[in-house]
Image (cartoon, rainbow, N blue to C red; front, top):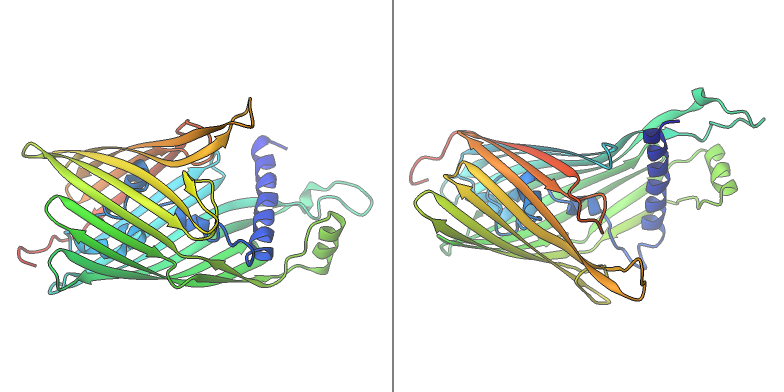
Length: 372
């Protein structure tokens, strides 16, 4: 068996283990539930280390801060992103479309779809027969994937510069035919924009998102689970606690056509202590910063620093070293089309290597008329 095959077998057991953990102990410590929705969307965002709560200015705002959808200048916009992680084993995709709904209050609506999945996972439960023989023809394949369907809406408030927005999201998670979950949650956002300053607040899973898991194992599979000392999962409810993000962005003009955008976000999770720069028994704080240099509103150069955490020193486990994840990216806008690329680090938390390539495309439709 080749290396890629062995990696997929390893991912199978990792996914089963994660599912068992999340479904068995959520009431004690519901951490990292629906974590695929905290990865981020859009190469622009990932190149700036996800500092988008205030800096988002395109259709991806439906994910980052729905209130910022009102800053889109075109009547309608489409965006798509694709990324491959872990040597191409994991596929991460995003598509979104939105349009202006009411020019009077600058209302804008969008629908987004996010998928994180691992396909062609070998299912080896029938690999070894009762007589001990190995038959590779008995190996089948399945997929493990997480989906999110996000419906967003935003509009201006009565006070100049302030906007409000919200999102309703449906979650679907599946591990082959063995387990599926459906969930529902609500997000809310607040956004302020002036000539140079942008400010945003994002309340994610403000309703507390619940995933109802249902498992379907055959009696034969249950026997194998018992013989291999694996816990047989049971139908249960998984909870995703609220996350609060606050962001600020400031635009500095560098001449008539160039500019520099400085952005900073602070994420506050409420599911207990995490390995972040500041953590407590009930919540954790995770700051990240980013910047974007715009050349004639055509070429964009981006960078960011995030995922600050302390890692135990390999030589001396009693000591901890500060780990910082750098990201970088570029963008090119040609008329109504914008192409973005980001070089980030996803697979290795404690590594400084940038080994994840993210591509995204944004298409603007008819521009708004002056005064709308």
